[in-house]
Length: 524
Picture 1 (cartoon, rainbow, N blue to C red):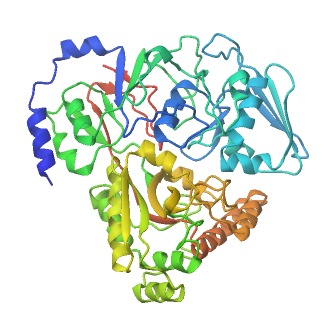
Picture 2 (cartoon, helix red, strand yellow):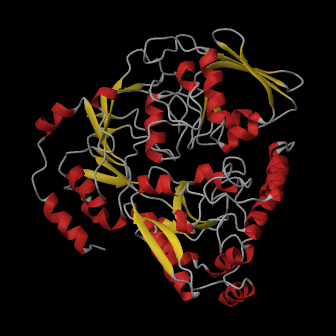
Picture 3 (tube, rainbow, N blue to C red):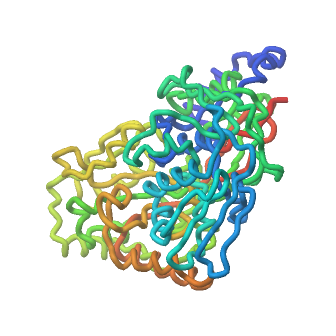
């Protein structure tokens, strides 16, 4: 369907696209417009998608996962597990080099792992089994465990934010509670700090000393080939501006394109749109467990009974064909997909639970509303109407995503700048198991992710999952964890959706992946 917004852009796109001769001058630069451009560049510090994707260009990982969720060596040349399954040994590839010219060492990597695991829930679980992590020599890392733990490689190959990126020891010694002050990696591109304009432009240049692996690139695994000398990530204010810039040849690649703008990508546009991550994203509602009324499980259960996921699926991607009403905690199409514990929609039960909880409807709920991310904003609009229908007053506080990323960390009361509920999205692969899913950590503030649930039973089940002897046992436990998560309403999956990316027709080699990988691309 062509909307008024689309018609305005059609007029803009009618302007002449620069001829190929002019665009040929830009073959050395790939200009990319992420949905939003993060001001935080520390890849351990934030779950921002932009920071994660920036990280895949600048940094590297010990292992990386392929499209069958199998961990593959990345910076590691070889590895071994002792017969008693208590000691892992990893040997780094020779010739790895930091962007400052120094060699990559095992000491760098052990320091990076310690810092990353202080920030990531899956990493924290693994470190609970680690008794010793040290550098045997310049290229050898040794990890000793107190008992066998079968998810070491899966943890080191985690694809979603925060990713276990390696950095020099002198930088990795920065506490996880503080942002690093220097961006130095060993990946295919190096960060140009002198050209950085926070919130406006991030510039990266090919690192000539990087030696890619020989295997073909599959998801985040295999060769990272820097085929274009320079990448610029640009902060453009909204989807209309981004699409107009793409159609005019001012940018080359867009991370996300709203469905109502897809008609602009016709045969004459010089660009096309395509879904590159088939698993897509999970739309999420998170209630603040520290503040009333959502500190009462009955109120959270009332919301869980009242939601109509078809309404969220209808709006989150801009076109229902890109979304489903999936309610699986670990995502649909994923190994641990389940229907256990999902409550049927029952408005009568929802209202009865609210009455039992003696909710004070006179106090408005504060909803953090991300106005500059269309999908997240659409979720908030649906929830607002749901809450009003249930009798609540709702104060929607609009902000951009960068402000939201900070504001959601406020554990104080509403009167002191706190909040009651909010929405976000996360890649389905990040949600895909009980250890990687950040919204299932139930240790309360400050350990749990924003929303700060506390539930010892879920934590006990997650630990059992971590120590399960085989995949069948893990599947059974994942089902049980989902049922418990719905009983306590740790968070609510609202739908699962995909969003097309778009790029100029002269780009080749765009990788299929659940995250935006910008290496391997070339201009013809």
